[in-house]
Length: 281
Image (cartoon, rainbow, N blue to C red; front, side, top):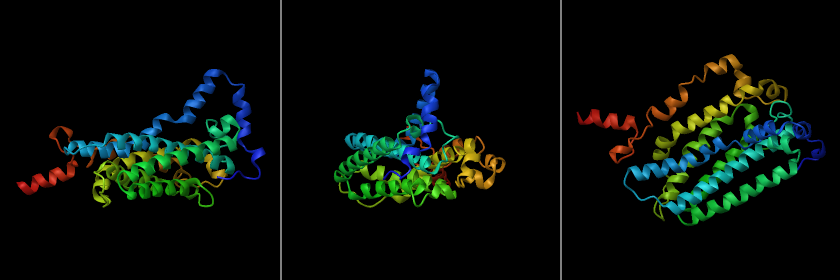
């Protein structure tokens, strides 16, 4: 992630100066928003779904693999968040609309980029250990997730600026990451990618994650449009976009057809159980 030639004039310096004199409470609030700790639930969700699925079926869960995967996933999402702040600082899209950008808070684009790269290297190294103890497909799937993350904001692609971030998000946190989690927790030597199971387990929760990304565009529609970021909300307009995300969507995506019946000792989607019931009758 090389630094641009104009780094000394990076737009982050505006907010770094402004927040330095801000009250301590306000600065803490901005840092809490910058860290985005609730968002790390989406990093651990795929492998936890995989662990729950195996547990519900009475199959062993490899706790050492689970813990390594969780740590690696958190580091890789930290890379994604920090790198996005760096890339957005380069385009100027966060100049006014995002004072809680880490680059804006620190005014040190190079240091944030270095930290992002360190998170990426360590996260991939841990994931390589997970893959070595299970199957190489785990690392391949995780690299695909990272590639989609770079396509989202990284130059020269910046697909998020073309309104394509949401499909990339669903693919990364849905079938790809869930497949990696399933393989990582399976007995060593399993190599066939469990696409069907990953789709059944991960599609709904990944849709909820995608909806969070979709809603994140509302607060800076003007800045996005002015800097060439054609997010879905910019394309649709705030009124139409708001009609696309009623409050019941997250609940539906997590429950309709994907709820797991843990008490039964199995983990099968509701729709599958209902089909089996109709066939039996």
